[in-house]
Image (cartoon, rainbow, N blue to C red; front, side, top):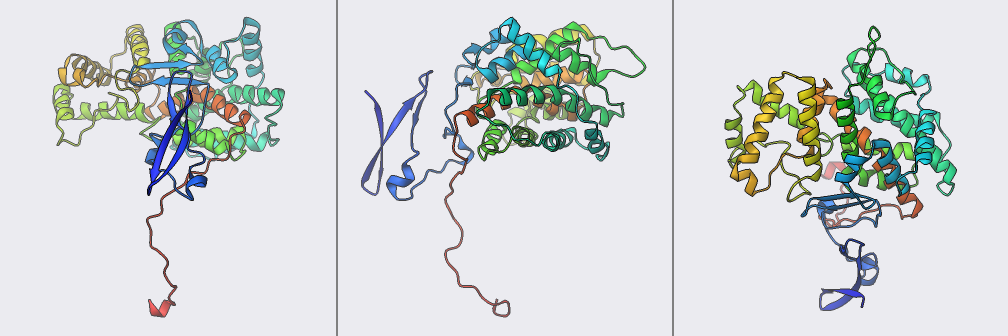
Length: 428
């Protein structure tokens, strides 16, 4: 028996179907609301209770701490798959066969060269430019070098656009870092894996041979997997709504990068390190700051703890905590900032105030620690997040276009002045 929701307005009742997802999520289908009621809309700032689409990509249950990509648990994927396998899964719906994965990687590598004129654009940025601004601009600029729009009804054209951006995006990300660091721009090595190749492009110095540390590679690979998609968050929704105008893949991704930039979204791991540095400057007393965090009258905010979606624990944090511990042990980094982080973590996991409220360290907390240990500058944290989120954005854009979803056009409730007659300037 189909479910029905009834809405009563001014004594009149209107019925709307209730749809159910494969994980038993219920949603009231109100797409006919304005038509049948003569203009009534809903108001939902931040869209916290509004489903913008039906999607088969990611399932997230914040109450139970569940995250799955295409039905596979994040725990199993992080343990058994590598980043390219997960990227393929997200974008095309199934885990690749050995032959499909090899072709996928080979095709990506064939597009790992960007037009030399891109370097001229990069030269125009000052060294102090934030790498997220650089990355967004360079991604958008790719359109100029690939002006043909993608025919979304052609599997071949869609596939070629996907492998093209997966090949070029790590190059642009590494170049944004090297521009800031004053290092010569470097291409990778096609004999390496996707993550190893990226690390070499980032860190290789012209006077030294670069060797990848397998513990570090494994940790970064897991981080990219954990960040690969997260349902309809701010940046993903941005990619979909920009793409809904039939904008191309590259410009839609550029819009997503800009949305990710904010400290309430992708910039959260950067905010963690900035908080730790502030605590260090104030003497490094973690107990003092844990007390401040518990004081409702204190404006101090403890970054990297709790999550607005996960009400129990962040399943990604459990996975990456293990990697963070391995990286710190492997590299033997001595850094007072990381010592403060470990102190905050220990106290939060033992303090009943945080335990009772389930304010556990989240993925942003541990990713910031790992990036710091690897020597990645704080303002490069968000570009690293973007590299991980890239396949999720692509998958969401592809799904939206293949489903031929209508152009995004939210409504509003007007609260401004009612009609006023215009007055000449001398009469005002």
